[in-house]
Image: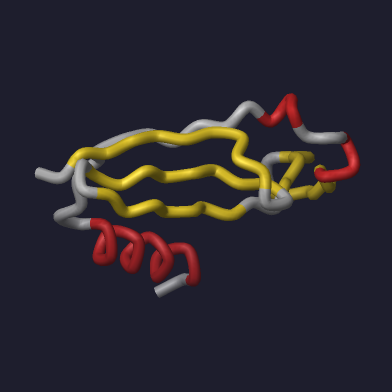
Length: 81
């Protein structure tokens, strides 16, 4: 198997049976240009930014927080099923 085939296989193995419950988005326009770094990949240039995903567990569900430099720049709530 090639490296790409192994990656594809592991991705399917690890994500089979998972269900999407919410989408977390963040407004990256809030970040200063210094937070971004440029990279180059097989499909050309791209920008990358370091972020953290915070989780807050509550009685009604989980709040997912998209964080950059400790600042919340996006959030989504997901109720328990």
